[in-house]
Length: 335
Image (cartoon, rainbow, N blue to C red):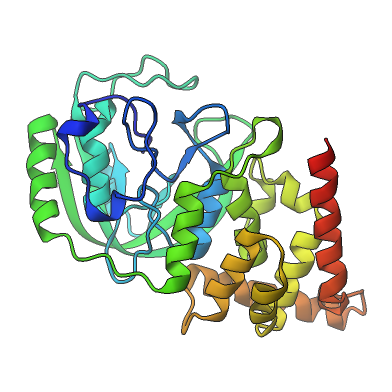
């Protein structure tokens, strides 16, 4: 759900977990999932790279904070989705209070007269009802063909265990639901590794070349902690950079085959995003279920490589992989 221009942001209290979000020059919060190239923020565009990072680290698409034990909410416009379990959604899930907060400043959700403005649905009027559906789990994340962009694949989130539903017909209903959610918002508690991860993802100021979204920095880290084994991820637009960079796959395969390598990389990596992601990975008592499945797939592929006598990614010394990554970074900086 892309946040655009609705009610003035200063008139709407932010949830505690959204306090970290940067704002644009008008004061509107820049939610974590929208494209954020260095020269502008595209409130109408969802970043596939950022979605990969959200999926790998199990984070909310609005505030960028972890879900922990909370429900995961998705926006829907057709009531048929409530009869599907699991249900496939094209956007990353959000916390309840974050979804209702976005509804306060997104005209497409708050007004039944709103019309979409992106290039695929320009002028389309939204359905009368907006549904905010709360699920107990994200079952799987995978790349598959987009329902809007012909010839492109995007990440989809397979949600299961539908638990609660908000039906929002107008701004008044959205506001009432939001006010209730605010009063019930639990305190935000992050450990040190989660804090560093969130700070990088929502306040990232590192400039990427050629107007690239700065979220690519964290997407690269997500690829290396296991995102490389997300089904269909190599077909998703904007992911080619990681497919073509051999160090990304090498490190990903090494980490899933030898988990202790994450702690080593957390200390040795000169890249802040990589070091932060590896420290997070090394200190988890248990991984988010989606990342667990990606790791299982990664180990299966490594075993297959070994049995076929092909050079295994894990046979490549980690120092060589790091040198490749550093060389690529130096080449990029010289452009």
